[in-house]
Image 1 (spheres, rainbow, N blue to C red):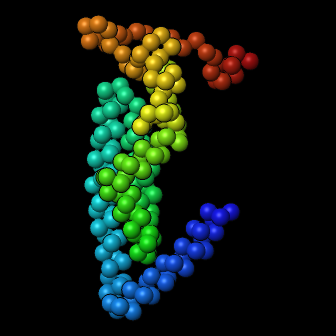
Image 2 (image 1 turned 120 degrees about the horizontal axis):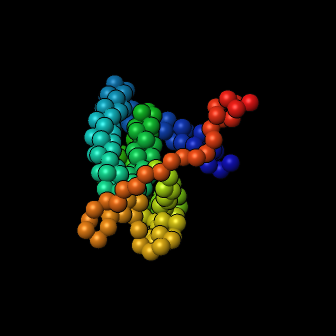
Length: 179
């Protein structure tokens, strides 16, 4: 309840007070212009930082790593973008803090200590986050059940070991066709 009280009652009142004070100092038109300017700059920064984060996540996926940090940064970018679209200078300040790389990396590191990112790729399940390291550990504290592993391990020569499998589970459609 205290979080909702803060978000829906105290924050809007604080935003109104700041907007009225700034409007009294620089004028109403300048205040509206400044609010619009922060929204435009925020949208540009969100696009730039979001694209960079997406490219880093894609690189990590291509190298066989879980992009847990990039997922956390993506969530922080989304929150920051929403805050920048909300009129007000307090939410703009917090939104810009979410979009700037230094503070975003720090927030992502803090978030990853508290969250678990899980995924599945071709039958291999992996997790990251929630561990003792700066970006968390996997389900086996950084090791697979058979020693240190990554989702797409390579053999001693650096080659990827490929294999084939056949899914033998019955689908719902197969079950209906048998009846």
